[in-house]
Image (cartoon, rainbow, N blue to C red):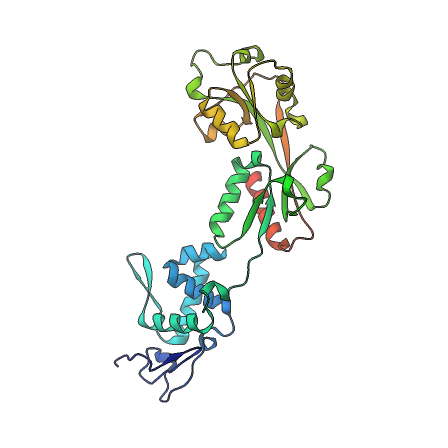
Length: 326
């Protein structure tokens, strides 16, 4: 049977005839159709449909909404069963709308997306994660990246702990002691120690001679040392900090941990980095044995009980705890 374009499309109503592309809802007389006929009152499902049409990919939309792609596929299958027609076809690995899909897309978009299809989706409350910049590496950072990759529709603010007086964090990661968290973190619940991070002095491999590698404190006298100011008051790093305090020459202090890494990488200086840095980045060489006493920091995490994103904050905390345990 030949397909015909609907006679009129106005606001929330579309005329369907017996020859309409939606075979499953065809009628011998004109009848008004609203988006609820196909999606019920589920605006989220309608938003999923429009997002798939825009992205052409189940996987990307699944990442945006933090859900599994197979759940989206099943949702579209049920929609197609109600319509009696396919709404998507795959061409060159991209999902494209069929004629039925285009009609449905226009119906839903014009019905309640006049200001953009995101208007029908719930407003996402930003999750505020307080984390010292020096911890944005290793297992913690990889777990955060993994979560963001699967939740492309999230709103997150990574904030400096010093800014928390004005913007309280939903989830906080901080440096504590082996016995307990720092007193300032007592307003948080579900406190737990995530991991212990070891630290070693590092030098860029391109500046270290294969035959002469600093291995004693005395060997550091002829090198520029880079000190991240965030390390200065951490008891777990006192061997390094004490040496920096006694040093009369050859020290550069920086306020950015990223700057510390760049200085070590490019300026031939020596700086304190996590002991797994060399394994993750071959440009950095750890200097084992320089200090007799091991240096390490205990990393703690806690959830703000007054958070508007309490369940999501707990989910991120569990994910990070699992990543650190592995």
